[in-house]
Amino acid sequence: MRAITKQERHTPPELEPQRRYKMVTENVSIYYGDVHAVKDITMKFPEQSVTALIGPSGCGKTTYLRCLNRMHDMVQNARVDGRVLLDDTDLYDKSIDPIYHRRKVGMVFQKPNPFPTMSIYDNVVAGVKLNGVRNRAILDEIVEDCLNLAYLWDEVHDILRKPALELSGGQQQRLCIARALAIQPEVLLMDEPASALDPIATQKIEETIQELKKDYCIIIVTHNMQQAVRCSDYTGFMYMGSLIEHGETKQVFERPADKLTAKYVQGQFG
Amino acid sequence: MPKRWIQRDEKPRRWLLSERIFKYATAAAGAYVLAVILVMAIQLGFESAPIWEEEGAEFVFGTDWNSVPGRESYGALPYVLGTLITSALALALGFPLSIGIAMLVMIMPKRLGRPLGYLVDLIEAVPSVVFGLWGLFVFRLYFRDYVEKPLHDTLGDSIYLFGGTPFGLDVLTASIILAIMIIPTISSISREVMSAVPHQQKEAAYMLGSTTFEMFRMAIFPYSKAGLLGAAMLGLGRAVGETMAVTMLIGNATGANAMVSSLFDAGQTMPSIIANEFLEASPIGLHTPALIGIGLILLGVGLAINVTAHFLVGRMVKVNEGPVH
Image (cartoon, rainbow over all chains, first blue to last red; front, side, top):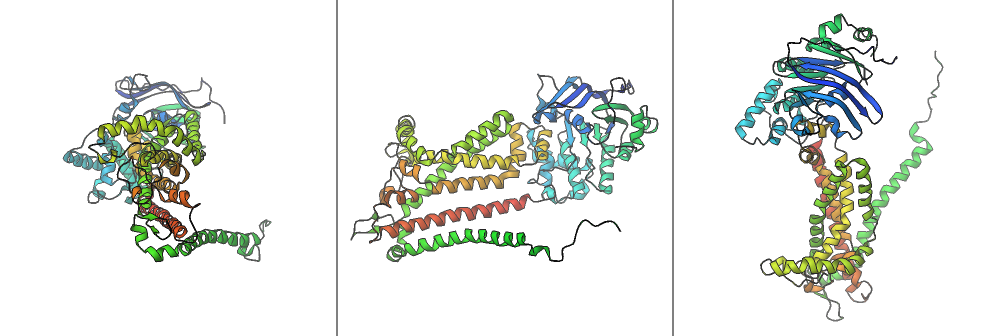
């Protein structure tokens, strides 16, 4: 493996300049103690689009994704430099309340993590209740809407009171998507949402992503290059903590500008 | 044919010497536990037989306590109640504090939280007689003047619990010292239990925009409630059996006088009555069997608490089982 020099680092193109960017990171570096895990990433995420982050294991994709809703606050030796802008608000600005802003950036994790002691219904509205919504009728409506969005309503509408753990892994993951949608985020982060699922559940999740794209800015980390091709509009390729290439998915996979990207998408390493 | 480097034994592996030693050693260790409990129960029952023959159920439900030969009469009810009341009070006071300490240690930066955790655990190393001494010569005086008296003066007439005469050697003082003594037990176990909640659960709560407390309520408490209950039960078990500090602080009333009606009344617990009277108990009359009988009841109460804890914890763990874990 060779080190990435500054010159080689790819400068991201202006993706369709007329488009509005929901989220922008400027020179983001992330450190775990002395380890420099993510190096100086500048990246823009347009509204109503899906951006996929690909790259070999350990390249910093997940670390980078987690900084977008300040999930590193809970990791004691992690440090984030640079700016993360959500609609021109710097999420790492000192004057900002991370709890308030975290509600704008939903996240779906690699492993389904529903709250085990709660019912399906309560899982979906867990975040809504934090916002003080208590009205039964409104909650019912939210549950139906969000489960529909996550393509889960038809499978669970008559067992809403059952524990969430009685669902299969794929259903649990879609429940977690519904739970994230219920707080009406503006950006949805997905960390390998289908890596623990079978092909059919994966397909359903991908359908869900296509549906959600109409309203959300979605950023998805994936190991599965076919998945990136199938469901993303833009792709960023990361390697050893740096963003090597970022462009339209079609271009990145068919005419990669960087040799490393070409090698990776052709499956020569990773 | 590649060279073989694993030789298949002809003898079954389970006949290896180490395996046989392991098997019998663990069996012996298991048998020891059962034997201790059984021998204890049988011995206590046997030695206390005279009092059961004499008093019958009166021994458990009676309130007399007279060891004068010829007028002997023994009832353990005040001490059973005294034990239950002081332990329950200690748990009620100590449990919330313990959980609070455990939560603080968890959310603090590690370099501050670790030492604090060790400090809490160190309280456990303080001998109970030292707690008793401190309670008797220091704490009680301040507690009487600055807490009990004001409470009694303002609320004593209207609230029954604060009637009585504040003296400092009473049920409340003993309960507070007990609470201090069980805090490290409950706090360190609940800290372990709550730290074992998977990170994904906490992240799920944070992702929904919860504050730290909401995260505890949403992710940590429901997930670890079985363990928290177990921690409380262990603390309760410790409070029930605690002898020295309680004996020094509870005031040591006997008989009907030990039936407390106010927090400021002197009381007596099962361990404290045994500790107070075992030296002067005569082996000829019923006094010794009575004390041993109380020991038997104490053993029964301790076992009941543990069995209940196991039952409750087992039920809660079942609820938590599932594919995520």
